[in-house]
Image (cartoon, rainbow, N blue to C red):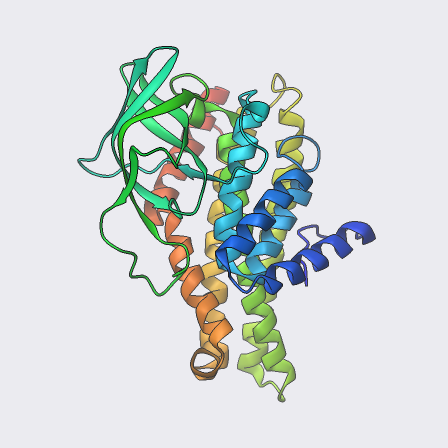
Length: 358
């Protein structure tokens, strides 16, 4: 079933039906990459873009993907994110309608991807780490270094100068979504925004919340399994504590999404009256921190509450646990929270009074 992120509001029956149908459609793909890429193309034409009045519905769809199958979510979300980025850059119609996209922005130690002007465009040379599913996609947005700083570029992954490199994927989590390096030699590229634009645009923060919605969806699926476990027998006080703790964590997460959506959508139209404490990066960091905490709490509660049996005898449950544990490592744990604390202090200083935001 779909995942709704609204708290204390009446459900939209039509959207609820859509989420439930999406959940079943994803499951029917059985983790097959070609089928999921075809679904990604269809959802790219159907789902709303962020910051255009329906951001919460987009996050609910992403959460539903995460609840249904994390492999599907890991394949589809970057495609949707790339379409949103291209829209924000005014380049939506510049690529084939049947293209499939990845977003590769990770940096590795000692590894550099360099962009140099070439005619009317750019040429890319060097190495890029952590390029998920690059062998199966048609296009990618990736960051490269220019003389003016880091900049985002679009490339055709089928160019002969593009090749996968590095160690093979050995993870137990998300095994169908290998994330290897790319080697690029004289690869033509198109600039998407100017130097620094990729991370400075408001959409960068909301894209991170979209990933968190997927984590929330997977945590919801684990909590639903815990709920079924409690219904299958007479729960003792500890089992009830597990269930109550799971409900509290998921409710807090849903409230965070709902609150953030009210900030995300007006920003598309007007930022002049947005207080510094509610700027996109800070709000997004709050949501991501909340969801990471929620997901890790649910992982712990489901393990403590149900013991080893589901992990041993239920392949879907065991795979979801392995997938979510790996997927959560896109967050930088204590370093993310330290960066968040720095942003909280900076917002207070910017406001002039140095008052705490709570």
